[in-house]
Image 1 (cartoon, chains in turn red, purple, cyan, brown):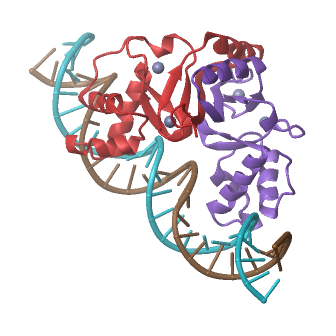
Image 2: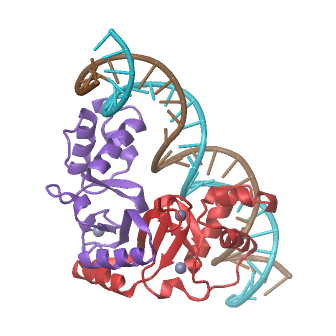
Image 3: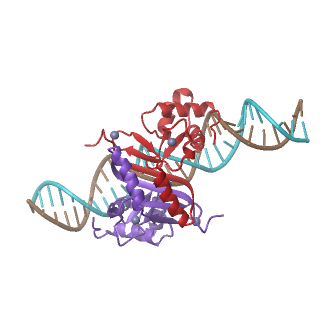
Length: 132
Length: 132
DNA sequence: TCAATTGCGTTATGCTATAACGTGTGCGAT
DNA sequence: ATCGCACACGTTATAGCATAACGCAATTGA
Ligand SMILES: [Zn+2]
Ligand SMILES: [Zn+2]
Ligand SMILES: [Zn+2]
Ligand SMILES: [Zn+2]
């Protein structure tokens, strides 16, 4: 899928995520955009839905947050599963793709005749800087 | 970790999950236990916290639900990462473990000097029965 | 006996996400 | 032109998920 022109709200939300150090919750995004006229959660969620659809933003299910894709010039939808390492101390998120992991998971799913649509691979722990 | 004797509330919650066809939300569990004296969400969440700690219940982050472990006589904490296939039509959950996937993910994490503590691998889609 | 731990019950609150309604704008078909 | 449709947007209200903070009771071990 090619990413269409972003609307005003989509651009505002995307910029906030891009400038953020780490993942943000929808309500945190809302707070950061109050000065830009945002008043309600739905304004954020609607923009996020589109950004997720375009593949330029990822949702981190285990922490109810959103993060800009680390590969802005490729298309994450096109290279298989995405995995995230999430530091519980500093919030830093590292995104990575591994073809072998894809292959194993997909192989198992196929053996079960299970049709995959969305995937979530998230590891919480502590990054190198934050490790005691 | 060996699973200690369950308390009354823990037993009630565990039984509900064991008898359920698929994953249940905390509030659904609460509703099913009103006749047993449950009145507040915390009663459910506190029991769930312990059951998760003992490894006899899994939390499905992507659907905010809980499911009894499919391997009741082993200990899921002892055999690496756990992955789930979740059918979005019928709610059926299949749990599986793959050593190769573990190995790849752990290898990558180690290369990043990332210390893993909790992991989430969840695939949503449609099971064999529900596939159109 | 005393202190520490654990489980439990209750009330209140906070965080996350969507339903339902209406408005306005652009654009192709009739 | 104007009708119909798709889409983005704004607003209010509500639904759904999770925890804070308080107090009480039973257990255990010093
Ligand atoms: Zn990405
Ligand atoms: Zn860190
Ligand atoms: Zn298990
Ligand atoms: Zn199914």
